Length: 256
Image (cartoon, rainbow, N blue to C red; front, side, top):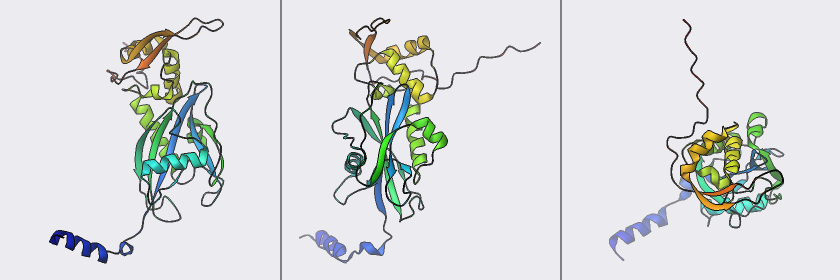
């Protein structure tokens, strides 16, 4: 044993974690999916205090042997039945929330995750409440942010998740993460309209997006009254110049 090892061992033997303020670590998940032209988020209704009966993002405490990402997958499955390991999903860390009074029980730091769940735009995976959740379901994001109070600081986390997605959609093809691997331009534009709460012009959208997409050479099966549509996959190329979320108003002519 080297002197350095011996010194470190003595330090750890005398170290008492209770000499410092304790902080609990949790995870929260913002799970987005688009159906029927609406951006949805998975929410649970809390079955226990604090904020009993309030809507909240799925999440919970990180176990002593878990990483934050492992806890995120476990908590989502326990509270909603959604299994990130079996679903076509893109997940990334969103932000860390550290406000001292964000949880009335104790000092709690949360590592929030953003999950984008691919769907055909028609139906979504069923959610079943479990663990300490009294209920679970899909809710329209924009309606929730405008009119519903969420538990803890979850409204702020949800708003940050929407801002992250909406902002990245200006210059990347991240919107395709909310679609099947192969999709039509109309499906992709529907995602933009749902997230941005707008109606993009089809022609301009097509011109901007085509350089960022690969044409598979395949088409959808024709439906009654509609011709087959070309199927595309997304690339990792950036959109340049970026798409404008808020179209510039036309310049008004000066009055003489």
